[in-house]
Length: 81
Image (cartoon, rainbow, N blue to C red; front, side, top):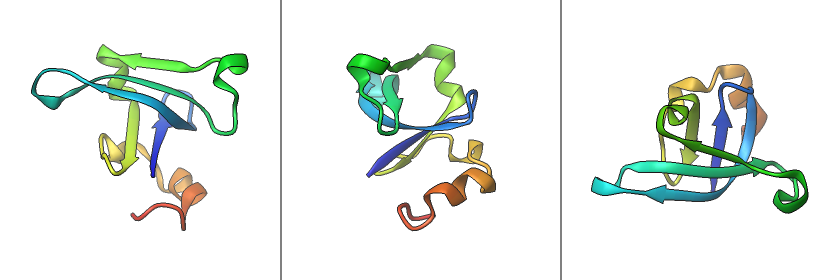
C-alpha cells in the first residue's frame, strides 16, 4: 500500500501514477483525494519543486518527515511507522 501526504494542503491522497526518470528518481506524481472519482473530481499533479511538498509512504518512501504526528494517527493501523 502507498499513501501520499500533501503537506501544502494538509491532506492524504491516493496515488494514481508515480513516474520515474533518470537514475530511478521520482520526477512526477499524480494523485487524487481518498475516495474521490479522479475523472469527476480531478486530481493533483506534482513535479519539479512541488515534489518537496509531498510525502510518500508505503512500499516507496519519500519526505516522510513532512508528516506530523497528528496526521500519522489518521492512518495508524494501516501503515507501518
